[in-house]
Image 1 (cartoon, rainbow, N blue to C red):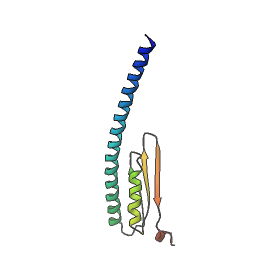
Image 2: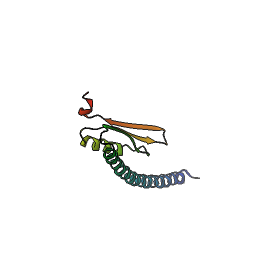
Image 3: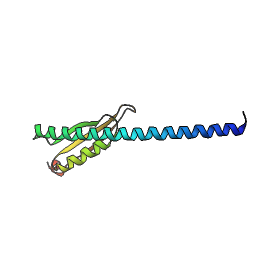
Image 4: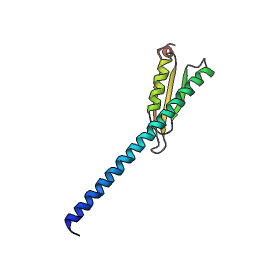
Length: 113
């Protein structure tokens, strides 16, 4: 096979591969955004429900994402900060890489002993 033809085929292959990778990346970003929003809503709902049912509790420990996406944990932390007198430990678990990301916040009121 002539070198020129090999070069043309490689360029065609690389263009197809690049287009496929871009489409896959866009699809994953869309899915990730939808999943993150879903986990965020569930996390805030469960935080509010927990503190309604356990008004005397000063802290919460919870897994907020089972996809490893830390956006839900970040948003949950911001929600806890708005509650002023609560502390929290939130985890995002990524089963594919076997990693756990955690975030915590402790209110100044909780530190006063």
